[in-house]
Image (tube, rainbow over all chains, first blue to last red; front, side):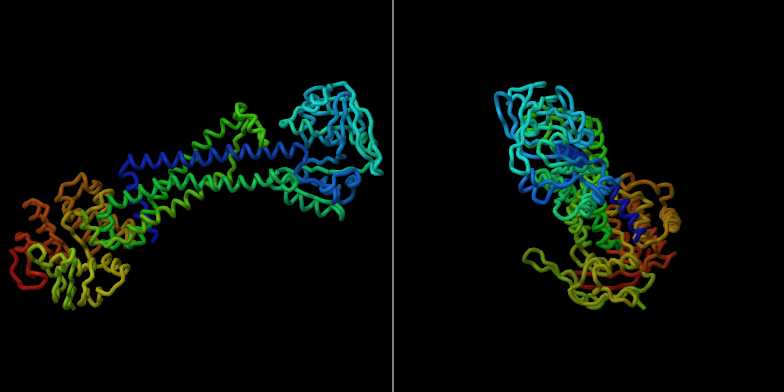
Length: 410
Length: 230
């Protein structure tokens, strides 16, 4: 059988180059198709991954711990103690890159002109700067010095809305666990820019100790945010942390915390598959046509080979090998083209001309293509598998010829 | 035991609404080492009989035996196997594989048989030399004359030492000189290797060389004569 495969492969290879022009046209089509599959996938992956990274960085982290009631009722009473014991050990394990606990309550911020409802976050600046965006995005003023910092950081859009600015005083009002008003004046010590206006309008930051004191909650917090090494693989870390928390806690991964983004990742995976299949289906018409033509031109030869004793299965194999060789060369060229076009663009593609549209669904104005090896493998495997299926019909047809009818075909 | 034994073979073809008789109760026996010509006008049934003997076509009725094996009821795959190991074919229109060189064309059958590379090489070189194509081993068919191509086809037919060689109008596309050379080649191979040759032809030059002539008309054997070859 192996020896027969040698002649089958040799015939397939030589027949492939028998009509140079047709083979080159088909190769060009396959290469461009494969390039389009991989390049477009890299662009889409880059966009979605960037959205997810931004989202994760915009506070959720990869995993969060809350009081079990907090997600339904994010009020001051649904607090949790600072991590200790087994949970603290899990948070300090090597699979956790960084973590931070936060006070997080609804509040009202008032300048001398306007008031707005916001979410007040009491943070530990040292820990927070390793997991969320705020420290890097201070546009005016400074970040918080420590957990006892009495200053407040607000977003640019909120500053404009309140008609306030750096150095001015604002009043923050919330509610303590006894349902009493908890309020005090803060000086604006920093203004941050964010990728979306919604973030700039919704969140204000002060020191964790300052907020605990304001709310009279001792050293309790409302949220622990945790970052692992890879947002695509949070399951092991999530399981360990969930196992380390006791009853009354809620532990959720990012894709459940922000179901829109989590769903988008799932949709993206499906979309990549559909995209690759659709591009290949377009290609497959050309492929099948090429093979049908090749078989039609060689009816007499096929008849001759059958007459000389070649089994139909070997004729079938020959046409399939011919198709696979064509696809493999096309894949090699297409992969190389995709790599050559993605690598120079990994620094980012400026799409600020459509920035407003991009922001509407949470994407930034710069696209960073990401060539994932899993996507490349998937594109290659799909092309080979579907190519195999597409070549079955002409190959089957060739193998069913009656030798004497084929050999006398004019 | 006969090399070929056909018993009451019948074959009809449909041509539109017409039924054309290809073979009409043909019975014939051919012994090992015979040089037989099937002679008939066009449509007389010689090619139909040749194809049936070669397992390329199935009779509607009757039996075909190659040695002690009945072949008319074999499956497609078994027929292919039988052709591969027992029969060498030489067709009218050379019928070489254009993408293979002369040597590779000759080696083709051995490749399919699973013969080792060294043996293929040794046998193909020997047989190409025997048919007078030494030095042309690496040429592709398009770079060879009609006579040379037909010699490659003959080399391919005999290289794996088949029980018999079936040739359908092998000289039809050749000039007289080349045709005579080919007939001489057939004769010498028949003498040297004791290979059975069954040739369907209406070329009188070929007929003159045959020791046995089977004349056919309208699908029937009308005369089966032995003669002293020229």
